[in-house]
Amino acid sequence: MEGSTRLCIERALKLPLPLCSKVLFSKLGFCCYCTCPAIPVQVVVGGAVFDLTAKVTSSRILCEGTNRGVLQTSLGGVGRNLAEVLARLGLHPWLITAVGKDDQGQKILQHMRELGMVRLGCEIVGRV
Image (tube, rainbow, N blue to C red):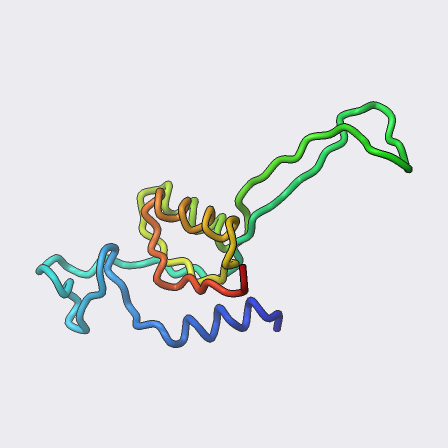
């Protein structure tokens, strides 16, 4: 298994299940903080990455030298993409993943926060 996949699975096994869409709920099926019935949760285990795409804009590519181009960034990873789709459909997916301890990892976490995704399963790894 890849290192990040193994880390995600090990992390998933340590987390309490199930989750309400907002808070942990008791084994009786009710939220710990109110009496709402437990809401089914979508758990996604997978990657969350920060993609960088470089495209050359000149019609002629120089093999030795500098080529004009553009650099595009986007959030990716199959697990993160799936969890984002679920969140945009009004659900509250729980993404279990690992992100770097850097600016790109923080951007991934910020985007998850903006979508209202549950981030309890996100492991922050590495050094700055």
